[in-house]
Length: 111
Length: 113
Image (cartoon, rainbow over all chains, first blue to last red; front, top):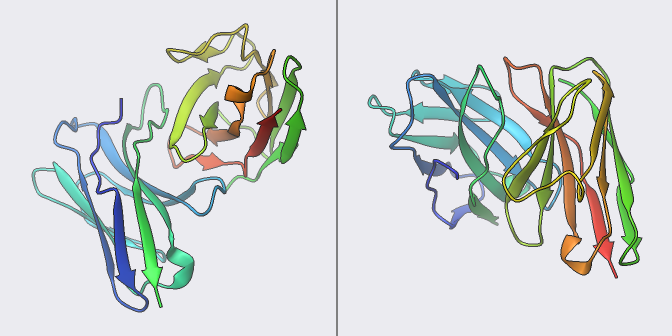
């Protein structure tokens, strides 16, 4: 079973920051938080991951709370092409390596 | 990042037949996985494809229905056997070197009629 909880859907205006929350209250100390997105039934695309520090790359920022029980993915300037289903996943780096997907958040960017 | 090619990209098949999906990665990878995505649903892991040994199946999936091969570190196949309309889904291949992010193929869209 997925170990994360996400809102089913969200809307955001084009050009604004999109903030996608994720709860992972049972996360273990060796589990990372990963974010993927899936655009219209294409293969999932990796966005970002982190352990406990905030992370930023060219696509997004990841803010993880100090207790690691929740996180927020931030798309700083959302565009129409960011409309997708966003998946928050917790995963260990060692061992089985598999990704277990929850239902994700369907993000719609509106013009 | 690895490049993953899946073939076919889509197919329409008659019930009772079988389809083999191929997954080719452009570099040697440690782990390969097969997922199913039913219409309107999230991804469900079918199995881990192990190089040189039998695949490791998740609960609810069995080898007779979804036989998997992985003859080397860059190639794997998934067969959907004795298909029924309920098998209509997108099937996705994924890979990881075990230390970084996982990458996905573009999927095979299967329709069983």
